[in-house]
Length: 388
Ligand code: MYA
Ligand code: JJ1
Image (tube, rainbow, N blue to C red):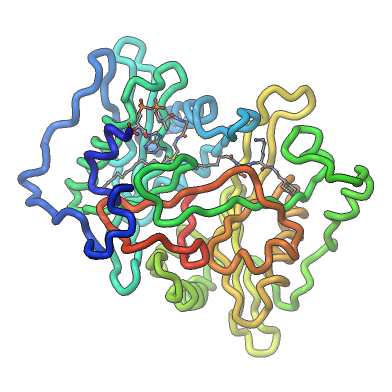
């Protein structure tokens, strides 16, 4: 059934429940001299290219490939539309490798027709911190689908990751592959219910009118928590301590240092937003919340072309209840004109989603590790990792 994935060092469906298999790497590293030195072969009309995201022109080509060919919902009504600034941020974290930003071009026209990326990360699994690649933005142009290009791209990114002496990876997908470490549910909180209904993102509930729906999703004009403010550069050490301590309770979570926190969580306009609570008395930083900006194109609507969505990222509550912290996050997202606030049921999110008027979506997100076996699947609440 999975002609490609059956050949890869990932948890196989047939091994599910086999307690004799140990947790940890499936294959040992091989000497770097034994890693294939040449790229994998592509069909003869195509060639590999390394995409330099510093180049305005290349970044534009990647942006346009994804804008027109990346992930859609199951009814093809919406398609992720990652911005150029977002792609630059997502692909250039501390210690990134240019060689992991991989494109495929048509040889004659030089048109970019496929893409896959990796970025380095340290991910803790129980007590072990493992160097991994986070793989994302796998995309094959719509006209080149089902020609088995994806397995070649995955093998090529694997080869280039191996050349950096890294042997594990983490990735997410909307499709089921061998074998998820956990499956998360998307939840959605309407901020602009009229537009969401007009574009088919949501529907009027039974026995609901538009006016009652608008009232139901109304939010206060400003955050309620004293000391709630935007994160600044000087907060990086305190936020790192708060987040490291919080993430230590999950089975799988990133091992963030200060340079990671500066990159991934310091606010960047229209890319990532972070807020914290600074105690008015002690000036201690007690709570933190963040979200990233990922609009979707609305396919074939007369009135609207873009849906402005915020995605919950990392949140930490120690003093302010998570419910209140997330409610303040919804308020700032509404003030910033987002149409919808999305979240997964990871970490402690599940405990507040219903009360905050989130509803379950029709999409799921499966999380995977490459060359790392887990004894058994995790609950979403045991996962402390959010990928972009
Ligand atoms: S997830 C987002 C994926 N992108 C999209 O959904 C965008 C729209 N779709 C497309 O562009 C294409 O449909 C794609 C497949 C490119 C997805 N992850 O070439 P094919 C397997 C992994 O004929 P196409 C993200 O970015 C499929 O099961 N494998 O198919 C994370 C089949 O294998 P098998 C996938 O439709 C990516 C084979 O590909 C996915 O033309 C993580 C068919 O190939 C998927 N999302 O192209 C990648 N979809 O026969 C893995 C299909 O065995 C990273 N397939 O079932 C692994 C770690 C690597 C690094 C390791 C370092 C140590
Ligand atoms: O956004 C998603 N679904 C929406 C729109 C559905 C449109 C018809 N298919 C949804 N809306 C209902 C919202 C409603 C608001 C009021 C309360 C009740 C709920 O359900 C879904 C997620 O649910 N998104 C997708 O399907 C996009 C793909 C998800 C997989 C992503 C793969 C990631 C790639 C890895 O990097």
